[in-house]
Length: 108
Image 1: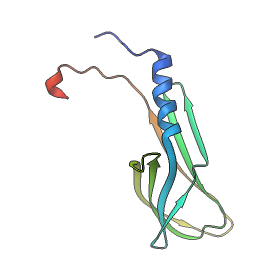
Image 2: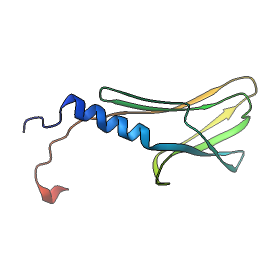
Image 3: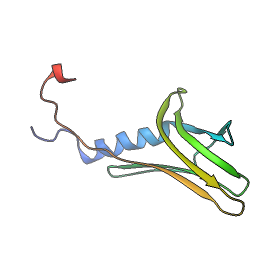
Image 4: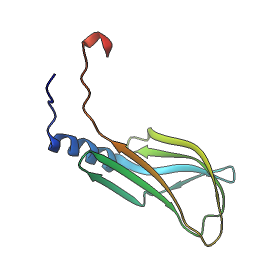
């Protein structure tokens, strides 16, 4: 089957995804926290959201989740990080938007 999405269409899907991210939720030393995204990038087929924990965040950072403007979890990582004083920490969510052919409606 021929490609149906244009490069611009793929770019817009990625842009809409990154623009929909409202904040990140995470646990710090077992306590729930939230933080605003540091950077959102949509470039071609790449969609990236970076969460940055500055030197004011110290301890065990885990269960980082991206929350969209509807309040839904749209991405998450179960990795745990030990965040020390004086060092920043980036958690990156990176995606490549691709078109995939669907054989039939039944396979949806």
